[in-house]
Length: 491
Image 1: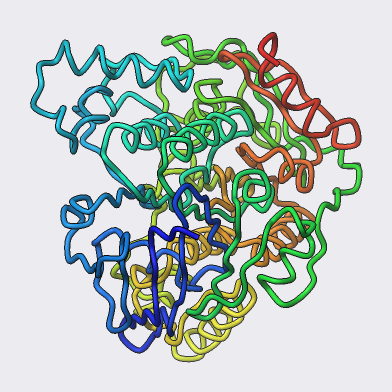
Image 2: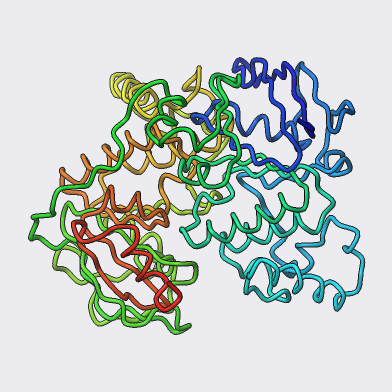
């Protein structure tokens, strides 16, 4: 085997936490290796070291037989390692063409030449994105796809992808996989991190499972079923693919009629959500599902409607503060809008309220609750007084989600709530959401994973081109019927 990358005994600690305990891993040329593991297993730490964003404490690495260590991302790029990190950021003022070529030898070429070359690259992978569009005007999925196209423009040998498709729907994943396969055909190698088992079974040549900072096992994903792969990762069985019982409630919590917007992104959208119902909302990018969320949490102001009621009473949502006063909570799909401060401790974030003014007995009780939440969601930390920012990306998402699930909101709107969260913790989160619904909380889940929506939601609404095109009861819905409505004539 012609190895491009060889890692031996790689170690790394963050404070008292040993993220990597001695990783051994080889990557062959033209190979896609899926990196799988629970949140906090060390996946992003490994990617950060390879990409030059962090340095190891010990061990060795080599690229094409030459010893390798990088203290900056520029040094990594100089030897042909390109990375797309879990929380990547791009200058919003760059055009698509400028973003694609910003680190390549085309960066200083005239705009017309960049645009022509960008059109060629986008056309190869059937991405209908204007090369003159500003990156800040693209949705997150489009930005991520442009980042992958950037890998084609740069002279990369090894491409690192960390949860690139966390909020992608099935069609967008198909596009991403097509671009990735083209990279492989060009002789590149890819390390691909995702928590979607079906993605790895479709794309990866090999799966390496990282557990407690070491590579615990490696195998061909086509040799095992999804449940077997999950067991290898977690060393325990979890229940997968169950459906909720039929929703029997009659009380309407939220009622929306003829919701429209001046910019045309919403067109006469009407639906209702029952008390204690879990209601799904899905669609392709720019379908309108995020705009519905924006209207319901008071951040999209150019909307009109003939009816907007909570528990039978008319409401106005002119600001985010209005939504909170009405008992509406919102978890964004934007990492910068999760509402958690990275420098705040895990304990204070999960306790909520003015904990500094709380009495001793209340604080002790609240800390017990925090410990229970950390254990239940398997948040990997040795210190609940440690900063949220020291957690893995997936564990930060768990903290943000847990904080909302312990509030007294009447309506929770959760935008891709389980993105970046490992399959074991997802099972626990699903049960927590179902328990919340049983207590009367209404939940709207905006998501792109059809399997997740089928497993969680009593009804699932599909948006397309700003309109609500269908609402399917769970017993009638499956991934194919949902995608048929999502894509319409393109299905």
